[in-house]
Length: 617
Image 1 (tube, rainbow, N blue to C red):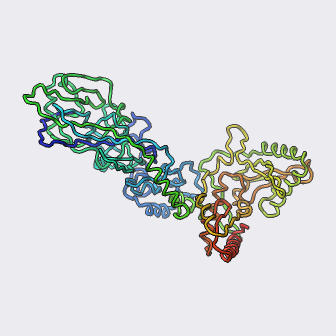
Image 2 (image 1 turned 30 degrees about the vertical axis):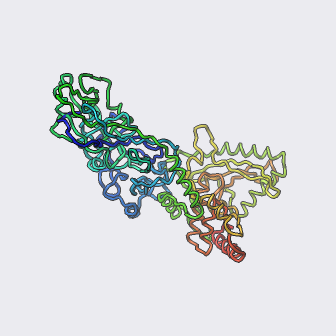
């Protein structure tokens, strides 16, 4: 740090700086696609893609010209690009294995609403899935000493993926995070890469505020490498600091050293970047030089000066203001508990919002992957992009079917019931026999083993379970591994139960054979083949090949397909009880309540007519 003229002030108490440290672990950080994989890689070596929105030489996620979410969606629709990977195909045909890097939903990161909305807010976040930890706030007060005390500051070039500039940096190993001012972030054209939640309070204050700050990555230029530094963007790091340039120029043990903060004629300076302990030791080195004055610590950008200046040459020492740093640690438990309290109070009253990006993906699948034909919905399987080759599993499926038959021989009643279930499904059009086993080269063929599971039921003592996670070899993929594991949008179960108990008459029902009543697209039927006896009454009869014509229960994507189909049907066919059904729907069950018998009879009639239109009863 350089030094200058002495500070003469008549004020009794002058604040010097305020620094922020530590952050709550509730993070939505995502990876920066421009960040090098190791510190020695410079940003300019990163290959820059072309933006699909403005055709600029930058990532589509980091586009600053077109930020509006709706405008980006319209551009993709006009260009007929996939909402998930931004390529030229439909979303339902997208096989990309990547999800949004912010919310992990099935859409491109540039379409995530968290990216387009302002993240710096004084309101607490709505999620509490992280551990409840402490946050610290580092403040400064003012004391008096016989000489000024220098902090480790430096002047160095910093760069982003767009531009470079000179910045004044404070190195503080007492801070657990690094920070950058909004002014410098705008100058560097930094694009946020995530956000973190901080719990802040002023020095001596009892009030606390929860703030959400953007994160970004800057690069400190050194003679050897460009060092990436992850920073939190704050409006201000500290108030203006005073320099003491003339007081270090005469010190003999510092004359031959290259100082990180070179001497200048400026009397004041403002801290633009604070480097905390998270990156402190990436820059600061081991050599320490002591003398009659501040201590010099070697770093990659020069020697940093820290400590008190000597006052021996002063005729009449005068008091100097000194930064006195105080770490205030507090718990965020109270804020979390209070927020959870209000969330519980609003259950059943306030509708919980679903992430917009995930809703958009579901709508795209409903539009392109689900069709309505002859009074019945037909759905496609959501395949992963570039999924590995799916083996047929014919041999292992045949062996396991034979094993099931041999096991059921010992219980003829269960064997008969097993055959009756499959015969009933064939009559209702859920499955079909395959007479021509030949298939085209482009058709996927896969066989699924199945086995019985006993139930405590007089009418249905067993249930047939299909193993879509069967591996033919240790390293071969399964059917479930080749399909998207997209979770369905489900209502809050607590809210459903509260509404179920609210009125006098409680209603409970379910959709009969919900999965099987949704047809499977012909292109996907051959991956659902399975074996069973050609004569169910003869255990020694040859095996017959069947395949599903409907969505089978056992595939990882089946709940998502069911939910997307039912919600699409409810949106297309509105009635007086549609909203009540939507609020009480949970997978294939509906729980609700009504105030009187008349409303109950109307609900019964309307709900049956509504689901009859989709052949779901």
